[in-house]
Length: 428
Image (tube, rainbow, N blue to C red; front, side, top):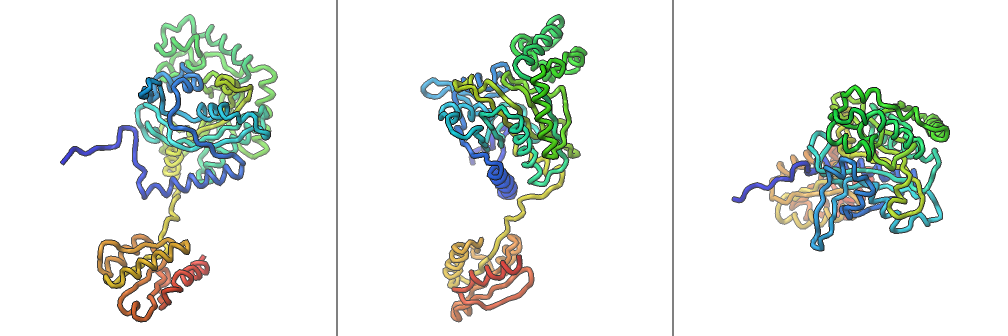
């Protein structure tokens, strides 16, 4: 026998006992996006590497350390997408969605992303993200709508221990003033910091504040706060976003240290945390913010956007921590039992008829005895069991048993589906 082949490190299989949970989450996402009028966009799993270098930023950990990049046969550099925003904006520009009469263009995506990092609970090398992008509006109200959609996604699956943290990163003018203050603050002692931080000083000093290696350096605590560099316009914008969140009764905490390290983020930044017990060190469920300049960087017009991304794995982990059960509706309507080989064809045709009538149905395919088939019906939590043997074939009627009540009836083969549908509607 050959050696067992296992799934690559940082990947996993979603087995049938778990996939019902995934489906329920995905269905709730699709329904919420319909209510909010966000339309689905599906972009390629891999893109030209340059897209992420430009769209995510070539000083970020994602681009410098975490991307799955490879050469194709034409010697082109391609990368498995590490996040969704860059691809969505690329598509927005390439397909000239900025020319649509209704702006902003409100889009959502869901699908696998890939990052080469150390696997841990709720953070894998292949993971599934749900995200939205609203592109083409500078209105603070759309910021509040996007935050509301993110919060509502978690609430719709039954999560309660949630904390929304917001901050303002200010406009370009505010960011530049803050950037200069950070450089002046860190430059005299930059040799004490790690090589990554030394490289970030000139390119993107805001990323120094994100550093895990040097977070206990005393200079971190005394670094200039972005809040002190916000100009009047930026303060007013943030006040309006907060006003709309108040209008929606969405509680929030302002955290002046919350930064989104990418160059193109400005104004509103937010994260949603889980306060559930036992969640571990990384409690962030979703992160998002407003970006101006990204559409232009990728060759489009001046079209500001706001979006967020959330990991479905971390959402499921939060459900586990809060002991919320989902995906339990996957039960079997009818199990059809053939008593012997002669009844099997009839049973097969009854199963087909039930499925045509939108009832989930199953039968035995391993020639088991009646008792073993009844046990199978129990395990599958069948609502009804239909038994067909010699007597039933001769009379043209099958024995239909309702499992919840134990009631049994003889029913003509042609009437089995309609009888069960009627009983189901009475029971609901």
